[in-house]
Image 1 (tube, rainbow, N blue to C red):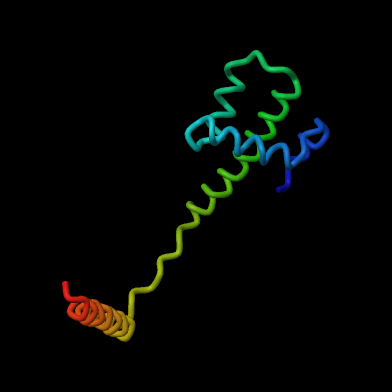
Image 2: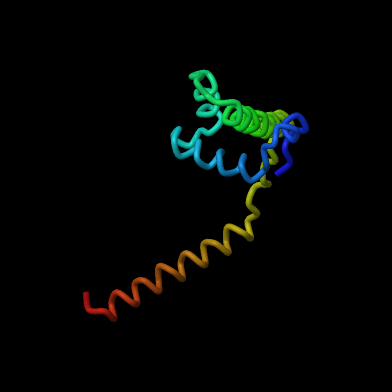
Length: 109
């Protein structure tokens, strides 16, 4: 994980950020970014903790903006299934059903 340059000087390591993201996700129902922002707004933090939370926000905010940009570019839609694909899947499904019927009749239930 590459940290923003501004946090490299504060002594926050990538491992610390990863661990804090994991911890925040556990404490805040899977939303570490919102959790970090809430904890920063709550105040009463020492400078080291504040720096760590700011690094988390910077990293997750950067990731979120990347994902948003990817979304704006449009997602790739897979092409429709070909007739040969559908026939192949129908044959597999029929074989699975036939196998289940044979096993059921041989099992005596």
